[in-house]
Image (cartoon, rainbow, N blue to C red; front, side):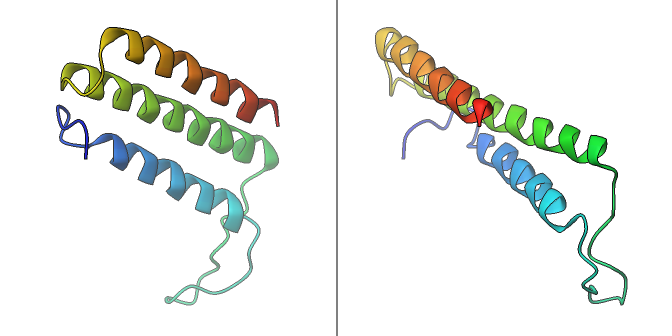
Length: 98
């Protein structure tokens, strides 16, 4: 496994994004949780849009941290850092357009 400068904490950022995605997915659910309450929180659409935006930003941030991590850990050189950064940013632009 590459990197390690940040103790792989960028993966925690991705986990937070996944948790936010789960909140979005379950927002309107009337299914009951283990305590008998509804799984869904029933936030208004404007809130859900902000959640989606937040998850996207977190994933972008995690990818950026990974790139920095690999560079400072010696796994990537400056040229590959810049190339991968631009590639990742291109993917982000494509994903946010959908």
